[in-house]
Length: 307
Image (cartoon, rainbow, N blue to C red; front, side, top):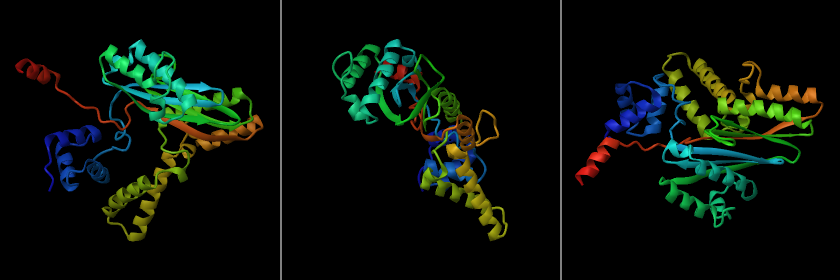
């Protein structure tokens, strides 16, 4: 049996909001595995962790840039939020996001790309680290593109033009008027920022994630004591609900709270007199999936003083 530390219990509590003893029991049942413990708590109805699990914090900025029918999004991390307010850091993120348009989403390629100030992107990043006095890193990048249509961007919690905490790109393939597509794309981009879909459509959802939801639903249903055929329907219903709630096209549009996104696209296409295909979306949330290292500043100062 794995040792259950107080730090692990604390981390699980912060992720799920469940009680201390429930977290300790969950970790014991999961042999110390954090993700399995989260699933155990969810199966027991003791945590609403699905939306919280991806909200681990990290600092920095997300940038977006559009040129013609191509858009780019980039995440650059820093140690503190203070750096995100630094104009030099903001300018770096904006400039490198623009470079992503031509160099694609491979971080290694971007790091070695020529920077307008001279040297490579990595050279400038290294110089910024020395100047600002805090570690920074290129984390991830992506590109969206259409042949005919528009790429629309949206920044949530904007710190400066083109940079903020959540960056979204929406790709609409169509010969409909640009102003119509821009208006639709902006609304869908805001929806993506708020609703955080996991895939464009239900068929594109991660198969492992679906099976994980199925296992959790199975355990919940089994505890109901109902007949097997009813349990099967309960499980399949839960899985169907998960698929609809996490695929962009089948989500309920946050703007009106009642229409599915796919139907909003169809309605706009009919009014415009031209087919519209929601081809792609990209959503980067700052620090998503990164565990922020906690430190006891007072203890560090005391330790340094005693050194």
